[in-house]
Image 1 (cartoon, helix red, strand yellow):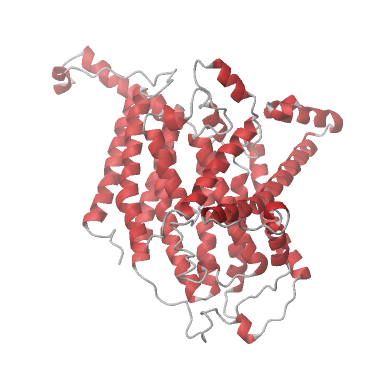
Image 2 (cartoon, chains in turn orange, brown; image 1 turned 180 degrees about the horizontal axis):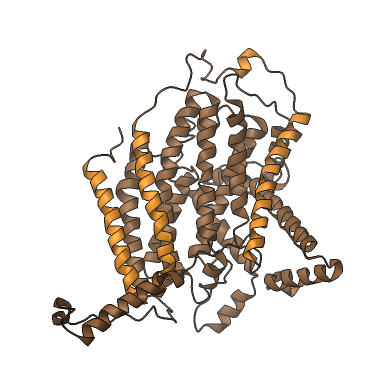
Length: 120
Length: 408
């Protein structure tokens, strides 16, 4: 099977996946009742009368972890091509990978010592 | 018939040939194959949802000494069908303060992403809808779209429970994704390929879980933990912890939109188990022990797709078993476990795996890795320019390898 054909297969599967969801929404709309009122459509807060919106400020800890994730995820992506050719290239790639991993681990140790990994 | 059971790749080729003979236009044949693959996968996703939900309820029940669903069909087999019909007929409530477009997009993204991943898995030889040479990377990328769906759901519902659940879920999933990717990397290092088909073929002599000494098993365990967290399963279910956050990110979703989240969750469990089975447990490869031909022949009698689904279902059972064994972690425990324990362990695993793969120190390494360049004696290293031919050659080897890097 040629790779260029597989692209079409992938696109087709994505369309089918979207179609599956839209189709079931449509079918449910056909047979389901619809009688919204003010109580039904208000946000669920365990039966209490809701106050305020949900789009407020949230813990800054999430932001720090998102930044950390970004750094490490990009570097893990860089490791994938390295892993593929490692056995063919041999010791040269091993040394390069070791240097790269050492820098990564240094980053982790830095974040650890700076106490960014403590959840507040 | 034999081809259909054992040599599915031959079966597919034969079918393609017959279709081409009958129709004659290549793109129509491809279109028919595409449609057939789509029908099979839609069927698989639907059946998976039904069967896995039933299994989950049965496993849960029997672990708590209950019977679980028993009324609809034999042993409650049709319970999920009844539930689906009920969900179809339920009123679809949209909260009045919701961000409508994102609110509708969230279940769509979540389900479509997991559905596309289904088409990458190799179910049997030749039975793989999409085959890329970077298949594994692609599946990792698409499956992380799922977190987008969760964040979108939590944000657009404009509900405090949803928001809290989505933020926690985002932080948890992206953190554990790192460990999952690193664990898969250990097997990629040994295989030297990201193509699912090649990865399965490379395990003809033995599965990576034991062929790669210790690191294979370690990578498998890390991936099992990290993927459980990525699917938001207990003990990592703070995203929708029902005793804390109502239902977490899908509190405001009802009827079919809720069903899509539910279906996507079970399809995701199947996908991570399928990836794990393919990478570490040999995919559709039968279990073989070198030298014991009688036993190997018996195992060969079991068709490859039975092997695949057997392995995947065993892993799915382990994930369900987790749920009734471990208590839920707190948010801080969860983050500390990932960043202060799992991440360093996965880095160490990758490092050891790299050394083992380069040295060819694993079972059945029939083709040893590239010849290890001779380390030059110390006195030559000290003055590489003055030492003449020997020093030149050592450095030359390195340079040749560096040049050949892009061609590999």
